[in-house]
Length: 140
Image 1 (cartoon, rainbow, N blue to C red):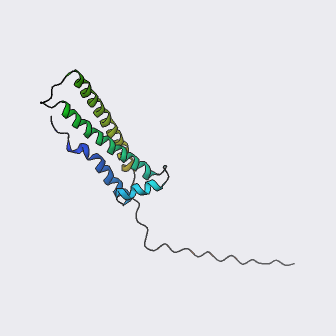
Image 2 (cartoon, rainbow, N blue to C red):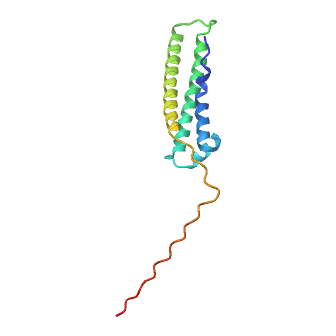
Image 3 (tube, rainbow, N blue to C red):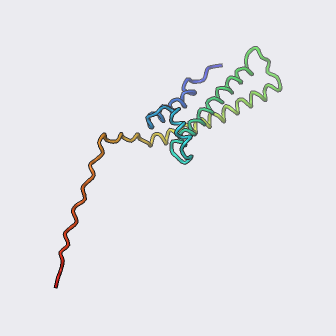
């Protein structure tokens, strides 16, 4: 059976690199930050989507290996084996669809974001407030 494309397992790595580049920190540190932040942050959403992507890729690899075992030339394909083969194929299809959906949506979000430039070394000078106008007194 032909080997899957090398890029199939690298989609999560590409997304991880893009997240690291956007936030300027390693993914492990960003995961720790996301754990301490509220769930409604963009970082937490990106980390969660990346985790789902990794899980889908792991399931693809596991199901492909199982399918290779079930269809090996040394093994006889019987009545019960056919059901297992179909189940593996279905699970692979679901995981590929999940992986592609997460990659597409996460990639679109990352494509719309830009890393903010670093703040200037010296903060801008605070303007001095203008002196209040002198009040003229009116006397009669």
